[in-house]
Length: 264
Image (cartoon, rainbow, N blue to C red; front, side, top):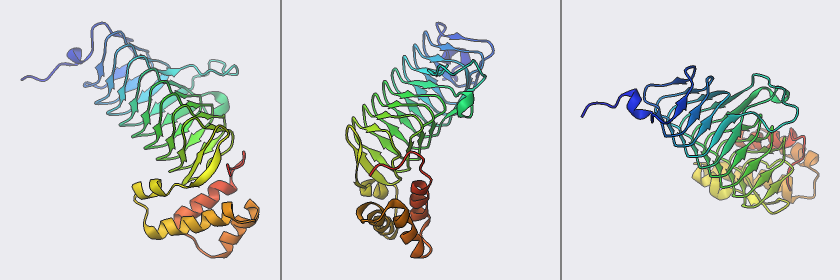
């Protein structure tokens, strides 16, 4: 059977600007609209009724489902038409009606979505967000501008995240939570006003952390969150114990650098 031509992969009812750059095996469904500054890598599948616009770069082997809006202008009244961009990595799945906006001058000009991330239906990723690799964003999660989400974090459905918050790597946020402060790496939080639930032991196991590393993180977690010490004193106490594992150092450094405070 002969290989399909590029024309066969692009539905004739799609509208693709002549300036757009699509790899030869990109598939585009009917009634999708692709703007002049969009670049799409090999193996990516664009479903029907998708709008891709702005200065948007999409990597390899992504799948974008129907009615998604990717690369639109930010919902920020300070946005003045600057030539900001959206950069999306490889192997992502963006489900129905998801929206991802490009960056602004006030946030570094770039919104980024890493690789291997699942963005479920009706989720919104606002301007200047930095989303890591392997993140799971469940249905109808709303992520405000300038939010940073670390690798392999999980955001439960209907969660709302205030702008400028950070969610650490391998953190788990329960469904219908509201975050107005940072979520420390490796922890679990939940609740309408999210509260700390504990260490994300299941997430650590799924991500291949050794028993020794998990034990060290449990000890650091207890010192910081379960002792009567202030955060500053708890961090000092961990430092006094001598060299720590890279994971413990990351855990402590994240907490130390928090500007909004960490959920406890």
